[in-house]
Length: 235
Ligand SMILES: [Mg+2]
Image 1: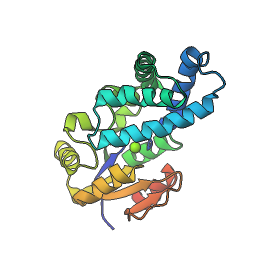
Image 2: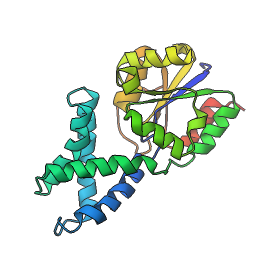
Image 3: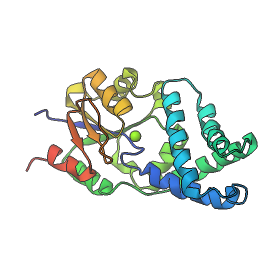
Image 4: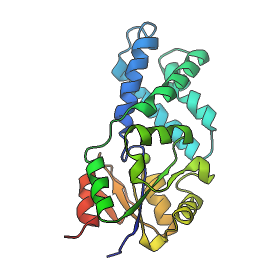
């Protein structure tokens, strides 16, 4: 098997529990700004819709079909519209408050810290490659105590390209003095992390906690983070 030296982790939905942190934030905003005006709508229906709308907007952003600012507000405007509320001012206020709070939430996936501790002890050099916004990803890393595990934190904004674009992977390897053959990408997104790493010939571990069906062939696939350890630590 390949011997890896550098491990590139995705952050959102891989280490940082995006859905849970997002839900806690949205629940707060719901109570403060929405519950009075949303009539009989239940929070869980609103949030369910928001998650789908948000995924859709992130997909557009990844393909450079919308700007960061359009994504920031559009996902809220679109969600509100689905419940009959057209209010750009409210969408903008939600977007601003959401981005001011969500990065401070600290729920991680089970085993995240234990896995990073074990990999570091094994001598792996670890980095982050994320498509998330520059200003919020650094807050998440700091607030969760994850920052010190990583040597390089590469955001798509700094790299000038988003996963799966090969240039962000080349940029990451250059920054960390890594080579494709001694590098491994770990992430939850087939479209960004797995296809992106495959595109430059880098091995991958697909983190698939929901058991998503697919027809890609990642080097490895795990449903829980601690399943990474037997792959990377030989006893
Ligand atoms: Mg992700």
